[in-house]
Image (tube, one colour):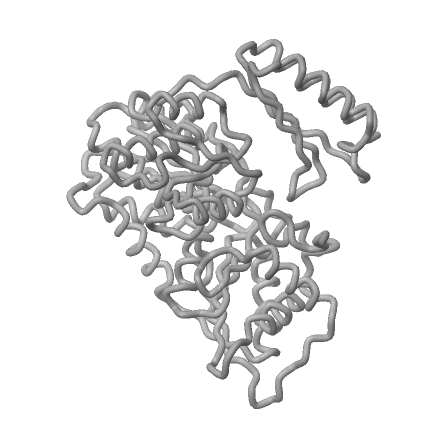
Length: 446
């Protein structure tokens, strides 16, 4: 069944636009609340958010929706997405909600839902909630309307949890760490956790004003972090995104280290310690072929999934893996978390850095990636990938690569763009193929 509201990661769109309005948020609260009303106990939902201006509006609307169908609401305030997932489970809530559009600009926002186990909802659950959004959800009698309250120690609970994933025998003393919080949800908790573990912390992207989230800072804009690392003589830089469920690392030279290198480092570290489950890791079709070859050389496997951390997690759970993620920096470590957690993943990187006693540029460079190029083509409507001219140019490109590389072309699940990615041993060939496909997509989409 085609989904009308939910994309690859919840519901997302421009605030006060077609989907992300206060009215829609209230309907989502009513529908999700009705869907999770199971049993006679007092039902509870926890709601977190990032630092977008629209978070206040959507939070209030969600509270109205949930309480109108009899659910009690616990408001957590600005907090990372993985913190909401963790607290949903630890507070015995029936559902968790994160208000965030992740790495998108401030004008966008979104709603992510978690079940009582702290995992993102299944496709079936999201489809059931969509159906309820379209219906008239029954309201409870006046005496059974839910109550709402804020908790003051949610940040402290998450900091304690994140620190518990760092080895007891290690400290971060003597390590200068630049942390870029993207003016987003982790602007308080991430610097605090690093400082409490002993690091010399230089914090940037920690002055949110409602409109500067992801604006020139964070994991999608690491240049400021790289410059700060070099200027301050730091050992390493960590960039989170707006809701802190992913990270990008910068080494001491200012070079950017992506999720593929981080997954390789964590997986090989776990394998050395006898902790790696499944005999490898799970990544998406976007991960570099160099990662696959690097793992194979060590006798480790790579399972590929569709793009989206939910698909990675599903494969991890069904196949018994405990390390997975995306090139973009979503790293899922299922021994600790039920979703991608940028801070927890960063702490595993820092632990390995301390054990190795070597520069980050040495510790984090595990393989030479093959030339890879990704370009986006925006389109107004229709299905450009089904056009015969697009299919023809794609088939020709695949034949030209002939086993020496890969081609991944797909529509985005969060915005109206076609993503065109190619990788191979010849950089010029990769660039030519991507440009050729993009030109044809633009032609048919015009």
